[in-house]
Length: 559
Image (cartoon, rainbow, N blue to C red):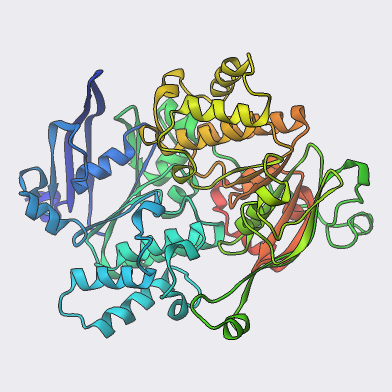
C-alpha cells in the first residue's frame, strides 16, 4: 500500500477545466488545474487579477453561476466526488465542512442584523444541539479571537458601525463558527493593518494546529504567503505555471512569471541609522518636519474631533456614553506632496479622511484649504468642500454607480472637474485608462463585470480626472496585484507632482507608504500618536507603537 493510500488527501482536484459562456462566445477560465490539499495543510494560490484563483475556490464550493461550465476534470472531497453530489448534498457540505471567507466583506454581511446575531446564527445552523446562551457565548468568543475590541458590547452593533478591517475580521469569525474541515479564504487579510493581519494569521495557524483544519488561501499578498502557507500554486491565465513548497517558490522560483511577481513585491526599507544631536534639533525632538512656510501650505487641519453617541439612548445618557472617533487631530499639508496616515483598523484614519472630503461632519476643529476656512461641522454641499476634495474609497464595489458604464462614470468626473462639453473629454479618458493598464473594451461595461482590481483602478481614474486640489486615497492599492501596485504608485506620484495636487494616502501597507509619502502620521485610538518625515518614522522613531507596526511587517520583505 502506497503512502498516498494510507494518507489520502482531504481534497483532490484533477485536470479541472472551466469556461464562461456569453453571447460573444465561450472564454476559457481554467485549463487542466490539478492539486491536492492534505489534512492540516495551508495551500496558497497566487497570481494576478484574472488568473482564475477565485474561480478555483468557487468551483470547489459549488458557487459558480450558470454561465460557467465545467469542461473537464473532477473534484474529490474526503473520498467523494463533489461533481456527482446532489444539490442538497453540496448545500450540506458548504458552510459546515467547507467554509469560505470572501474578499468583499460588505456583501458577506447582512446590514439589517447585528454582527453578533449573524455569528450566533451560523453557530446554531451548524450545531443544532447548542442553546441560545451557548451560541451567544461562542459568538462572543469568536469575535474576541479575531480581534474585535469589547466583543460583549460590540456584539449588538451593525456592520456599518465597524471599520473595513473590523468587518473583515467579523467575516472570518463567521467562517470559523462551523468548525469546518476546509476554509477557502479569498483575500482574507487585504483590508487589515499589519498588526491585526499578523494576529489573524497567527489565529489561522493556531486553528490548523488545534483542529487540523485545512486552508486554501487565495491572495496577492506575498507577505501573507511567506508567513503562513506550506505549499504554493502560482496561476496565470487559468493555468498552474508552478507549484512547490513555499520556501522553494520564494527562494528558488523556476518560472519567469513567478520571478516577475516576486520582483514586484514592495520592500520596507529600514536603514540601521541612529539619531544624532543635529537630527534631534532639526526634527524638534519628535521627528517633526521643519516648519513649512504659510504660502507653501495647501491644507491645515486643527483640532479636528469626531464624537459618536450610543444609539437608542436618551440624550443625556447618550452623551455620557459618547466615544471619540477622533480627538484633537491636527495636520499641515504642503502643496504637491503625499502625506501618509497609518494605524490599526478603527484608529480613525478613514473618519479623518471623510471629514476632509466633506463626507462626514466633525464635532469640533477647523479645516483650511488655500487659506479658505471651511465649516467641517456641515456636509460638503453646505460647507463648500464639494469639488475641491476627491476621495478614492477602500471598497470600490460600493463606490461605483452600478447603472452607469465605466465610460459614463469617467466622463461625468471630467464634467464635474472642468467645463461641461470639453472637446478633450474622450481623449482624457483614453489616456487615463491606458496609464492605469485598463483595456478600452472595459469602457462599455458596468462595475459588476469588472474584477476588484479593475474597479479600484476605475475609482483612481475617476478621482484624477476630476482634477481636485486634494485627493484622499483610502487604501487605494489594497485590491491590486503586486505587479499593478508599482505602476499605480508611480502614476499617483507623477500626477501629484505635475498637477500640483496634494494627497492624503491612508494605508496599512507600510512599504507603499514609505515609497509614496514624504511625511507620515501614525493614528491610534483617534489620536495622532507619532508623526514626522517618512525617513524619520521608518528609520529613527523610537515610539513603541510605531515600532510595533513596523515590526509586524513580514521579515522576508523587509530590508
